[in-house]
Length: 263
Image (tube, rainbow, N blue to C red):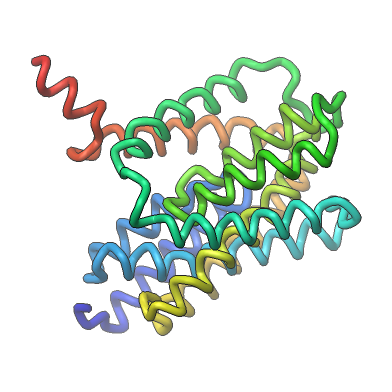
């Protein structure tokens, strides 16, 4: 790993502050911090593992703020959180075995679909709506799939959790955001424990970034509670669209390679 001086640490802290703010509302902070870590000199495995530290602190910060306001139904949410934690562990364990081109091709499409849903759906609002499945069925599906993905890759996991809470359990956007942060925290922690055990985490860098992302998430979560759907909905659309665009522009993405082969 290249040596990171005080200026580099300060830059990473500033980037993490922004990422924590964005992550607490719409997710996607990892697409800001992971490239920054790579530029700072960490190898890809270290960057992904170290990013889980700041991501966990940001999610914990937002979860604490939402929980204090009574926006998390702990009686059911703890079960979802437990599933997300172990799914994150499973995802991190399987990261070497799942063909990366599958994720590279699928994730941008899903993110574009999420952006279109939140941009066009007239049903996205602060109030809860009718649930399309029971909490038991939800717990066996959404936290498993998204938590597993979070352990393998991560970017966009918050958007996927958010979509699941809104469309499947009928949560309003503020309540959905609160529960999203809890599950995001747990799947982040699950994968972080495994990465830490393998020695991939660069702790001095991760902890500096974690403090900054914690503060950013405090600002973001308070803004989300104050303004609700007026802030959450457009930010979800913008962040999901930008994440999809960034992934599609990656030279290794199969969609880009296919277009370049055609032209």
